[in-house]
Every structure is written in structure tokens, then in C-alpha cells.
Length: 187
Image 1 (tube, one colour):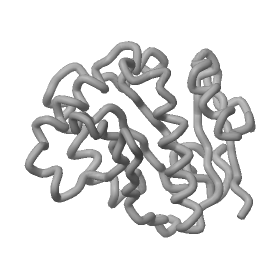
Image 2 (tube, rainbow, N blue to C red; image 1 turned 120 degrees about the horizontal axis):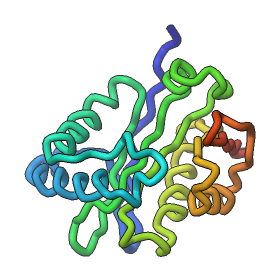
Image 3 (cartoon, one colour; image 1 turned 120 degrees about the vertical axis):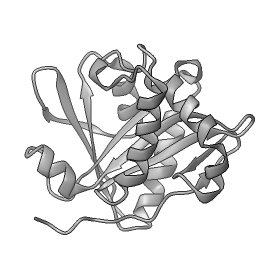
């Protein structure tokens, strides 16, 4: 098996949001984070295209927090999108290492980091995801990471628009319902 690629956790702040991993200072608000994740991960709109990922209980949301913690040792790097005004976790994005991505999906090109993102519907249409992903991808360049991919359901036109805005290009059909989009940043 390949050596697992590691990244430095991303911590970025904008006028409205903080992008961060689970930090020591978050330990005192794990109940709030769990509740925020339950609201996000139990939303039928968020998981319209992948209902099997939807959670149905606070325990499952708590397990998701535990998964976020352990994911850092297994190649899945989760970061929260926290709204600064009320410290609500409004979204999550994942960076999946190339070796983990390729072990799950052989069609992923070498050295490609997969991105996956979720945002609470009440924050849709505010350009939060494009802004967050732009900042994150720019931060990844500082870690010499320049190849990214996203697997998107063909019917998920909003996500496709986000990827288009970020200069991801259609690469190939991934399966019967999804497509693979790729982007390489030239530095």
C-alpha cells in the first residue's frame, strides 16, 4: 500500500466564516457541533443525491464527529465551515488523500485529492462554498498540492455550477449517475 499523504490542517478566516478542523478550543462546544452536524447531515435537501449518507439520530451525528477525528489518521481530512456571527457549524468539507481515493475508486487519476462538501440549505445562494473552496484550494497550493477532483451527481446542477466557477472540468463518467470533474492548478 502507498504511503498515506498528509496535509497540514487548514485554518482560514473570512468576514463571515471560519474554516477549521476540530480544534482543542472546540472541545468545550462538542454538543453544539454535534447538534449542528445533526441539522446538516439529517437534511433531506443536503442529501438529495446520496440519501444513504443521511443521519437519523444525534448518536449518528456524534459518530460523525468521532469519524472526523479519526479520519485524519486514515486520509480523510474534514474541516468545518463555521459562521462567525453565532459559531454555528453551517457546513463541512472533506479532502480525501490520493491514495485513499484510488484505493476506493481505481478511476481516480494519480495524485488527485478528492473534495466533498455539504452546506446547510439556509446558507445556499450566498457564495459560501465557492469562496471557501477557493480559499482552501489556494491554501493547498502552499502545501504543493495542485490536483483536485470531485465526484458529482449529473442532476446536481448547483454543485456543477460551483465546480465550473472554480474551473473544474468534466473528466469522465464516474458511474451510471455521477461524473468526475478535475482541476489542476498551474503554479
